[in-house]
Length: 172
Image 1 (cartoon, one colour):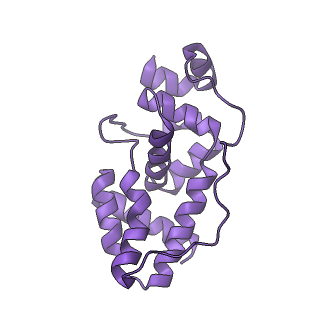
Image 2: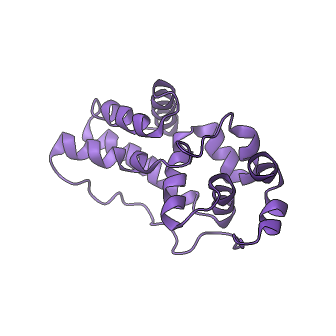
């Protein structure tokens, strides 16, 4: 599975789920079950690499503004959700987290920002296909600390300055 096929699966399931991340995860499992186990592992590698790449202080700060706070777990689930939004939103956010203010049409704090189930879709599909737990993917693990310059999440003036468009749209 190449990168284009990965994003096509993500986009197709998001559109079919009408943006509901839990429904998207269920649809993703269904779609992955149509593939052979090696393709499911390829999907998992693409997902994990993007998940690790999004482990940055800048994105955590953006998640903090969008979600009005984001614990370690909430940020993990946010990164899964971000991947589920598709290539344009994901790449835009990784490049410039404040651009999420422009990239997100709608954002419902009750439903959006938490894609925990998306993070398990490939593992679940692989297990259903093979009856075994997915093997190690052979990619480097995420760093122990987020990349970049730390953000003081408790200082609203820092957040408003660092994420002016997000702050204006979601907290202003």
